[in-house]
Length: 377
Picture 1 (cartoon, rainbow, N blue to C red):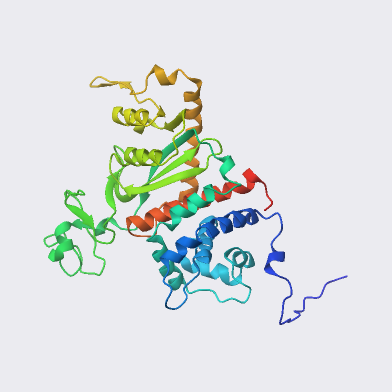
Picture 2 (cartoon, helix red, strand yellow; picture 1 turned 120 degrees about the vertical axis):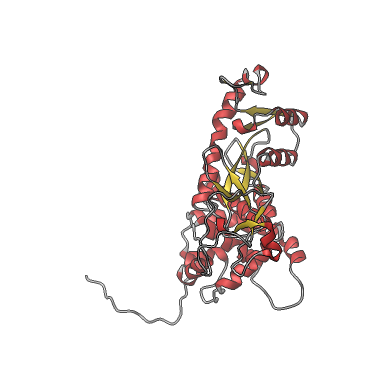
């Protein structure tokens, strides 16, 4: 029998949002872990928010919405609010009722920026890792780390002489005497023959961004550096850092993250050739961590370099295992840049960019949880 296409026009729905989400949906496992982690952060929220004034967006709902935005790869606040309007799954995960009004995108962004100024993102990551279902999945002995460039939300035209920051520029924000090709609001610039460096120039839109070249023959661009520490058992992220881009940022951030780990005998740290320096290897050994760093030794007509890693380390089978497993960390950066929006961050300032990197790492861990702990909450 053919069904009827006529609308019923019902005014009320007696089906709860909880019943509309399938029991085996992967977001159920993620929602359970996130809710428990947010419950642990309740005292922190009480310290951040004032007890007077108008109620703002609840931080629990705000963080759920931020995680959901990363999980679904929504690049703007407006897209996120549009999905909350009609997507019942989004409303269920965030905690909005079917008749609750959706926030304005500017209000959502304002509350997010205020939350990013604190260390809530890092505390959320730690709370997820301390969850009873997640903690048994982590390794306490074997880790890997790596860093990656993150393009800043600033154009190369904003990288101007520091005298322009002090009011020495013209009406277009260009340093006096610079090559002005037109008089529009966003004038063209000709950088040919102009020497630029972080000592003499700075971005007028993002003061924390630094000009950095990833390698010989690569273009220099305004960027930050994101650093990730991964445990080797299941490939979950256990630590993040975001720094200004410079040559030794990866090694300095690595030592900070390793120092935060609980000390255990037999700890190892896998890394690529960029970490094969004498100072870094000595620092790790003094901290009681075996450096499973890829060897960077070569012989040319002009130079010869010996690796800081010798047979004391490479003769053990665990060294080869660490070198194989550490490449899995590229999956973290690949997912974070494609889905997590870290190819080019839409925030300015070291604190906000760092919070976005940590949230993306938290979302990556949550994506893996349904497979690791089962598909039921």
